Length: 312
Image 1 (tube, helix red, strand yellow):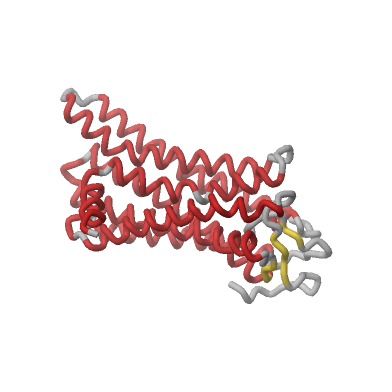
Image 2 (cartoon, one colour):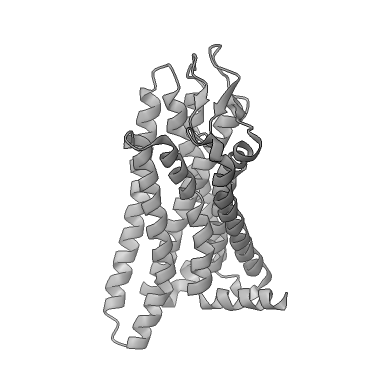
């Protein structure tokens, strides 16, 4: 991804400013960011370790949790490594190839994260609405194939973004007022016609994310309809509990995603440093919270985590 064909007017590098206006406070800003990042790494690696070690957890639901943990690690790492370099060492320069690579990887993993959430909603739909056929419909191999389809979709849909930007001229302004190479932030500093770039990203946003959100809403709508028909109070609570963690994670992920997108496109009135801090928190809070939610709400996983932590 680093060897894009660039026009002669393109610079050899960009400058990421971090949080403009708060440069003197970069060290203090980095403290909560670094703490959130470490907590997210510990939580997600714990999920991967426990599921990998325990044969009893080698099931579709926990395989999906591992996929979610991997995407969470990828998202937070792709943002925070460069941000911490800016905050701690004032290393603001980034090559054009490095910037486009970071942008592609960040948005690609984010789209893969959305596909995993859709698959998790489908998993809960089958588990509650068609439990007798769950073992035949959702096998580990099928979950792996669905994950591969999500990865291929993300790569194919996101690859045009850096390719289109690689053809754009960047005449005099090489400064990106951000901590990472976000697509719209890079588009804004181009001195060429960015209509195609903006249109493609907007269409992709509404088509892909809109489709994913529709499928998630449909799945949980059908689940709620089935749950409300359950007469046994115990069975009703059990069915509801199996969905609580997933609903919390999905509501948080999609809500923060749309807030981030709306502030990117229409948040001209928001102070730049506030927008940048919120954008970073969007990529830090879900990866930190997700393993905590599943650790609390999923008894089997919680018991195994307690088993390994108490042993140590």
